[in-house]
Length: 378
Image (cartoon, rainbow, N blue to C red; front, side, top):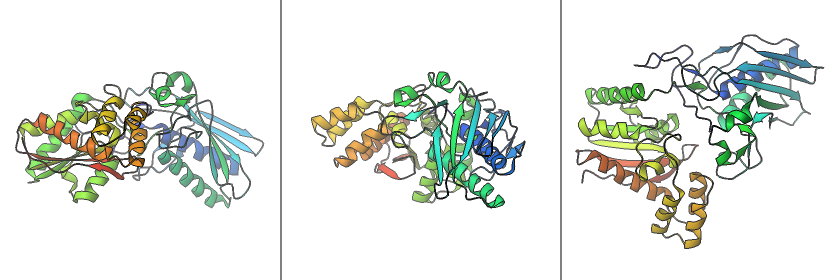
């Protein structure tokens, strides 16, 4: 929600072909601050630097910029976000976590402090009223809280309040206000690592990926928008790693290069909202350069049998996911309609190249919410 993209490398790694330095997501910084604060709450001492374990096993260390201990009931730690060489709007922001004891059995409760937004509209991966701390960072923080609690014989029942200095001001340059996330930024991240954004470098790596797949004799490759879609494609088609193209938002780059260097079959897999942009004719799926067209989705829904009233609801939906949920509840296969239309757009870009295409749309959890049939050149 704030523009972070996810990397596959570890601490200090360089992106292939770029020389650019990756950084850390707000979720990773919040986890480090939470781990340090909870450790101090139990021991009286702040670990500095504090080391955490990311979802893919990397173990970065973070220096603390803020330490505060309040009478044994709460502790606060802060980490300055380093987004590496990515022009992330949250680069340099101070991410704070205040951990407060709760009665046994309370579990871990998340609160939005100053600079962190609150969800006010449906269609996002969090319920209305929840702080905009996304599911993966929440799970990462819960895991580290449990580890610290186990190490010190504590129950692990705490309130975690995440704050981001100047977050409300920074959020004005993101899509959060339009999405109904009010009061600040979102705490994001699925791998904990931010990929430096470089169009030319990323597109070059896509091309090299196609070259490697062809050289390995792969006849079926997949263009994926991220790690969740990669897992879906592997599950669906049992493709090897060298057949997976990390296309990110650059669907056009994949299609244009494969048009000149064809393979027998291309699967495109990504989030429903992103692929609805491809269906609408956009080849760059980045949120800063293309938006989900709800009127277009409403027209697709009408073709699929939606009533005039439902189509109007789709037009007014807060997000693409909310539009999909409305149609699913009404028995209108909007996911399949988007997948088939995206496939047709892809075939148009391929301009008769000997490549069969299919499209898979997923939700944020990786569940398939739409798929097309496989169709060859026209």
